[in-house]
Length: 89
Length: 119
Image 1 (tube, chains in turn purple, red):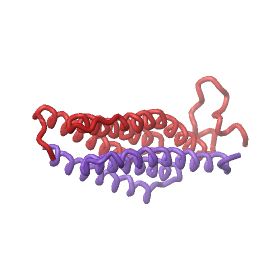
Image 2: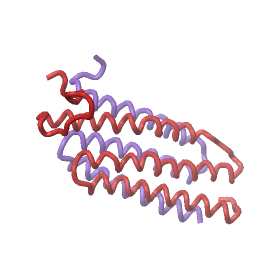
Image 3: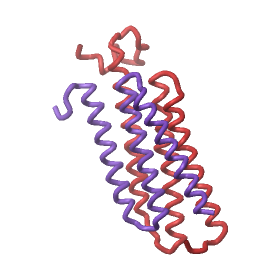
Image 4: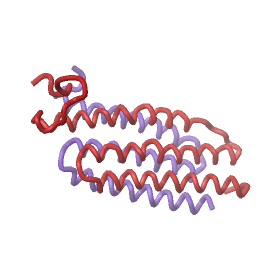
């Protein structure tokens, strides 16, 4: 039962990733694109967790943690660049 | 895959399906909602409830299979802390983009929004 649920979850999260990518390509303004990138990072974290459950190792959670941190920092950096024209000041 | 008690399999499967459907709902809202400001709140749902449920399923599964780990709690705590900050920054970008101050509604206490104070 868990295997079936894992396959369904991977398909659903993959579909969510594709939808976020459509918004990233279509987004009328830069704020929508930043938001779509942030959503794609979160969906990627979900996919990594599912991959970790499928393979049964603990290694995947380290990479999920790193991607969560990188996603947050990159989103903040993009927003700072739009807001101030400078990232570090 | 080892055989688990039925109730454990049920809990893990239901948590997985809940997390996956909330993640899909977040991206669907991001795609379908009209208006930049209303689009912000859908992915926050995916970040908290969606990934939270998936991590909870992973924790239950790791305890059930005899390799208990709580690393997932770190990812969950980090996402829960950073999701409001990200949403706030993106809302600021949307405020900043509509340069005409007359388009925005009046802020509750101050005279002008903070992103417009310079120019």
